[in-house]
Length: 587
Image (cartoon, rainbow, N blue to C red; front, side, top):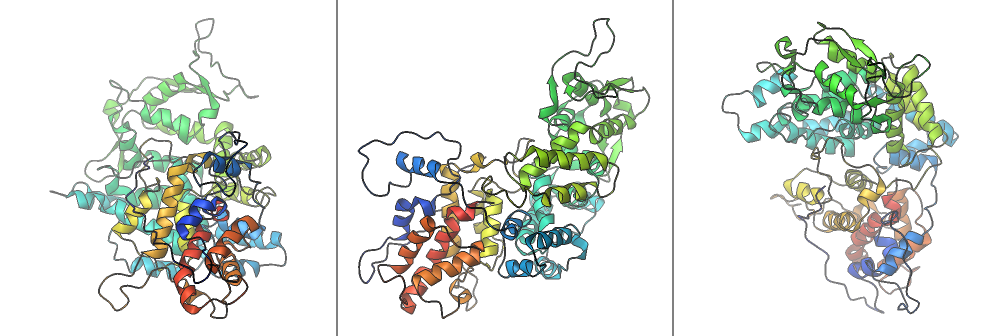
């Protein structure tokens, strides 16, 4: 994960207040760590003793004292189920969305069930507004078939590097647009999840050219469908076949990369790995060493299962002419294999690999592993075992159903724990950025400048090179550099991100805070409370609220109206501080 920054600190010079000195943005970020630092920032660090003679007053943001204070901070108050839903089923609320959710029913439980069922039926949601925004971009690859992508962006004579990369670039841009503007928010949340689960580095010369197919058909096309169908679509995609080297897997030169990740990451998961134990019994015959279920089937896998599965996938290829999947029997290992105590007879050809996929998709361990990952994404880093097991039970019982994954996700989202769990995850960079743009009602447009600023946060789109996907625990995103880059991005979006071009509005900011606030709101307290409600859907905790009110007041009475010029000057920075506050980091 890259932590290098392409951004610059665009914090303006401190403003001199008309009366008594008040904190500038830079001073507030240094002194008011309860506002500037996320409460999860050091959740896994051990507290260290504070010196008895530590200087009085708030410690500097990055001092040892400040680290202790953050660790000792109480867990955040759990918001309403509606707020939780909009931050975990969606990428945070856009203006008006909380009101819309509140109007769905008479109780929180009723509203949540209606909202979940709507989000789980995306084809019934009118998304024409987002569709129009995407259509206006002039993308040329998003509607192409796999065969056309292959012809135009992989095998075309003298194809340029830019042409090869275009499908991946347009998918990246469309992903941001959908996450920001789409009404089908759960689809976007799940697309992010499955891209990490079936991670492929998207900027390879082989994967990028067919990336539209991988995103649109293999993942999005199956995310609310059947896991076995998704597993097969991924296994036969050019992106995965090249990324994990199965295109070079032959009987004479086996390459176990895909088979190993299929077991460890895509299917059973490392939690069901029994080790390197031999499958040769005391009598010299086959004996799987892992614990068995009531039918004698292994509950876990060993390395020899991977070795045999590797042979099963020999000959799985991509047709060099069409880009479609094909099977090459000439390089396939034709002898019999045993995987998870299942005998796979010789001469079965492509079916060998299909059988392995069947075994994994129909395994109780896979049901539990996939359910746990979904719960970790949708609830918390260490989800309650009761929810994991309930989801796993549905996964396994409905493993042949065409809407299996839809039923699993519904089980998780409507569990009692979903509406009572908070403060166990922080937003990853993509979630933070999109939720900021949604909350601030940004006039978003893709640009290289935006990409450079965003990628400095450490989660560049489709850019994780190892096969395990971007980390999904809060400690991976809460150290100093990831937080610093969030603040830099927020500063840039709030203070320097302009319309550009040559029009009369070229110097206008793309996040126009002033026009979004009623003119009648003029006191520092009212301004901060309005924007907290607007951004968070709830009030800020007192320890976060007061420093921001102080900043907005600039030394004036916090209950008295501010001059219009001071509101104009300081408002966007005040909103920026709310967007940097701990409360905005949680999900």
